[in-house]
Image (cartoon, rainbow, N blue to C red):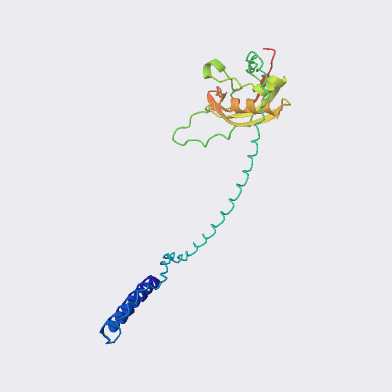
Length: 238
C-alpha cells in the first residue's frame, strides 16, 4: 500500500519539474528566438503495486485440552463367599412297627377263697371290771369262738386283678395272707405268710384283700378281733 502512494508522488513531482522549466524559459529574455525544445517525455517506471499480501491472522494458539483425568478403576467386586451347604438333617429313625398285640386271653378268675382256713386264735381279752350297780352274769365267758367268714357276693368284695404282664409270662401261684380282722369286719393288717413266687401276684392279692369286708369273728354273741389266714390263688386255666 505504501509503495503505490510513493510511485504516484514521484510521478507528480516529475510533471511539476517539467512545467517549472518550461515556464522559466518562456519568461527568460533572449535575443535569439526562442528555441523550441520539443518536449521529451522521460519515462517513468511505475512499478505495479505489489499484490497486497494479506497476512493471515496469526494462528491462535489453541490451548491444549486438558487431559481427562483417568477414571478411577472400579474396585473389583468382592466375590460372594459360597454359602455353606446346610448339613443334612438326621432323619428320624423309624422304629419297626410293633407286632399286633396277641388276642386277649380270657380274664382269669381268682379261685374262690375258702370259708375256713387254718387260723390262730388270739387270746381272749380280759373281762371288763364288774359293774357294781348291776352284777349280771357274763354269758360270753367260756363261749365258743366262731371264726370270721368272707362272702364275696354279700360284701361285694372284688376279685384280685390278674396283672397283664403275669398273664403274658404265664405266671401262676397261690398267696397265703395273714389278716387282722377287726370287730367291724374290716381288715386292719395284711402280711404275706407264703409267697406265690411272683411279686406281682403277691402285690395284687394284698391290694385286693385290704379292701375286703368280713363277717367278724365272734365269741358267743360278741364280735372280736381275729387273725385269719386267707389264701388267694391265681390260675390261667380258668
